[in-house]
Each structure stands twice: as C-alpha cells, then as structure tokens.
Image 1 (cartoon, helix red, strand yellow):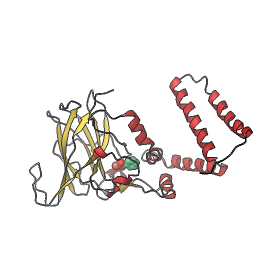
Image 2 (image 1 turned 180 degrees about the vertical axis):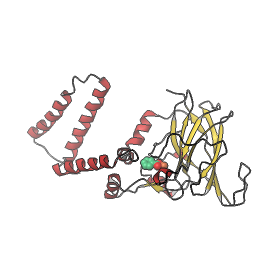
Image 3 (image 1 turned 90 degrees about the vertical axis):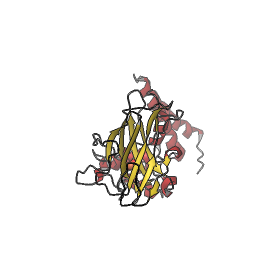
Image 4 (image 1 turned 120 degrees about the horizontal axis):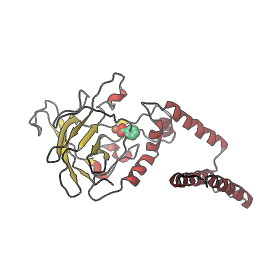
Length: 295
Ligand code: BEZ
Ligand code: FE
C-alpha cells in the first residue's frame, strides 16, 4: 500500500467536503435513513481518501455500475450478484439471522427461486425431468427444543447436472423445484438430483470483475431450501456436498460448515428408503432442519 502524505491544508480541505455532506442530512426526518446515509457517506469518503481515488477510476466505477444497471431486468439482477460476490449478501444474512442455539444456519438466497413452484407429495420427485443422478433427501423439521413442526412449507430448488436451473432455459420448463409440507411427525422426504458445481452467471460486468481480479465464478454444489412455518423464523439456506473440491472456494461465500452434508452413494439396483430400486446409481442425504421462533 502506498503511504500518501498530505499537507495539513489538503487534509483539512478534504475533511471539509465530508463535513459539509454530512451536515446536509441534518434535517432528514427519518432517523434510521439519516443514520444509514451518514455512515455511508463517512465510509465512502474514507474509502476514496484511503485509495486516493483517481478521476479515471471514478469514471471506470461509474461505467461499471452503469453496465450493472443496464444488464439488470426482470430475469437478471446483477446488483444482487455484485452484492453476492462482494460478500455483502452473506454479511447481511449473518447480521440479521444470528446463530441461535441449534437453529439451522442460513445462507444466500440466490437469483433462481421462483414463486408458485409445484406441490409434490412427500416422497415425490422434484426433478420433473431435470437430468442428473437421483438423490433421496429426507429429514425432520423441529423447533429449538426438538419438538416436531408439522405442516412446515419446504421449498426446494436446484440446478440440473449440466449446471442450469430451469429458468435458464428458453422453453418455460419447470424442473428441479417444488414445495412440500412436513408431516404430523415433522418429517419430510423427496427425490431430487445430486447437486453438482456450476458457475454463477459470469457473462456480464460481475463476471468481468471476477476475471479481472483472478477469482472463480464457481459455486460449491448445493441444494436450496426455504422453510416457513407460522410462529417460526423463515429459513433460507442450502445444503452442500461433503468432499466437493469447490467447498473452499464458493464465489458467493455461502458455505457454512454446518450445512455440509454427506451424500452417501448407492449402486444401481440397491433399494432406496421408499422401497424403489433405481436402475442407476443414486445418493442419499439427511438434512434435519431446526427453526427458531419468529423474532
Ligand atoms: C445460486 O445459488 O444459484 C446463486 C447464488 C448467488 C449468486 C448466483 C447464483
Ligand atoms: Fe443455486
């Protein structure tokens, strides 16, 4: 890092800009907005002074953010992707959903959730034709005391073995996503496909940023969950595949040790917990979900 020595006069002139901007928000009527914007200005100005931001760099930053805006539409949210690769999304999740006893940890939402995914019965298949190795997923939904939560709504969504979500195809298919409900004893089970690694969308400005900084766009293999039940905190999370080499280098910093699960492999012809005998190899994972009370 270059150490910049400023004259007292220059230092004072720069500080004065910050003071004037801060003072301009003195009459902001919403105290929370005022708190947030004052802190933002302080940090933004400190950043510019810290790196001695050049005018060319300021231009490049504006051009970059303009590209992020232009590529964003109903189907693609490049600002969230930017927040994801800068770790802001995970930091915000951590601030708002702090560790709470045995409660299942949360992670990033990601851009591929879709409302109104089909209902599948317990033991049904969420793949709906998504190609991939069959995976039997089962577990319980309980509260912090280990009591069953019946009727919890469990949304699941995942990419196929080619690394694409259904919404990334042009044919309006619905595959690799569904919702189901935990039963009276708080258990759930379904067939999906074994998660495989895939890159985040990297054909836009965020991809260029990753490339320019020598970072990988790949995500660790995962299966998304969103679990809701009246009276409990909403959980948005994923489970990750133990042994996946990508675990240590997830482009959006979403991996948490407690969410890494063993996906046990079974050869073709071995009978699954639901009594079926797949004619190809399959995997089996258990994910017990614990919800804390609603805040
Ligand atoms: C995903 O899980 O699919 C995802 C999450 C964050 C950014 C991009 C993709
Ligand atoms: Fe994903």
